[in-house]
Length: 457
Image (cartoon, rainbow, N blue to C red; front, side, top):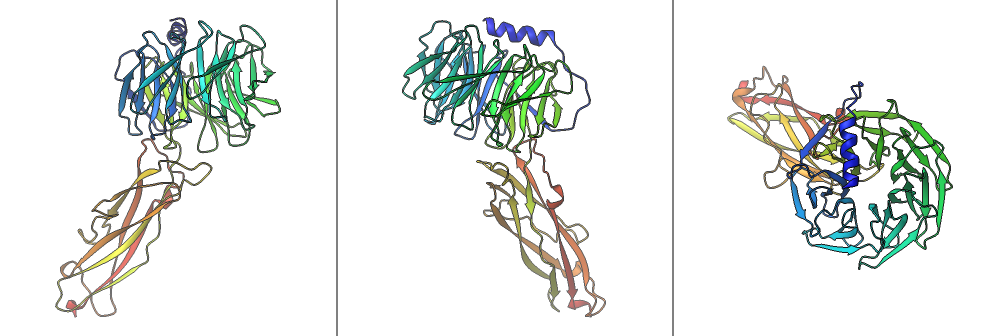
């Protein structure tokens, strides 16, 4: 296919940058089908990520823990490209080779709808505010709309050869799209009225576009080597990338309030704040052919590696907190060999802003005897003997922890001299992988224990 050869040629031509970058945890997962060329990716209604396999005629599904399932499409050489979650609870996608709009249920049932314009090359697709799906036609020079029942309508663009590439919903309730060949950002109302805004940098080739929390839209300028911001009034600001010829191509609005983007030639994941500060992270596999990036319901950034045949994941921030525990005073009565006490330890998912997680994250509560005698502290129990718990944003849960104080392990000189030691509790995020905690100092708390053994005097 022509589009596939375009991306393959670019992967072969350009290498990864060796520039020193900020440290960050990046996970990669191999797609089972060799040379499938994963391209589009989107969060699904089931909490998983769904992606397209352009050369394999398949739709893939990956769980937040990295388990992949693939579903075959009925059309050969379909060239499946963009994908998005629909208002009907299904996943909708575009077929470049098949010239279709397809829909797949979470269980894998596929339906396809032919596009009226021949060889239209449908690329990006998004769910609109009107309950329909909207898509762009790269060669057809149309913006398309399809209802959940499959009724298609096309709206011609003002100029021929515009190369519409990507589309998203804007903060104004309109659909915003990029015209890669015409060097334009466009807007279309749900009634079909189109407005266009030329970019400042000539020949910048805008591709991916996404709305942000601050009421603006952000887009990647592939040849312009910039990330651009445009407000609904059409005011454009451009931010050059630190390294030349990085070729940014797709963007996603992160749960941390920043915009994240892929760099095709730079082989990096970039992050830009609303003020324009840019940080970049290397992808482990060189020349991976980074394409679409999306925010999962787990709050992490997920992206496709077209050439490397992988799905990547980069952790953002997942704030886990363990509350402080009151000191404990224990007396072992004369004649007793042991005394048991229980304490309650509270952990919280503090991911409450700027964007709440939907699925939440898993937290493990670990313990350490520290300078208390070995075996003093038992395993935490959130219920059913489990020391792990899944909490959604802002949710807390209390674990019960049993402590055992043996007379043989503690010595008291007199009734005023208690043995003091500390037990530590540490809460860590288990899932999703690659998480970064912005406040690790509140992951650990100490329990101070004062023990008096009456058997010693």
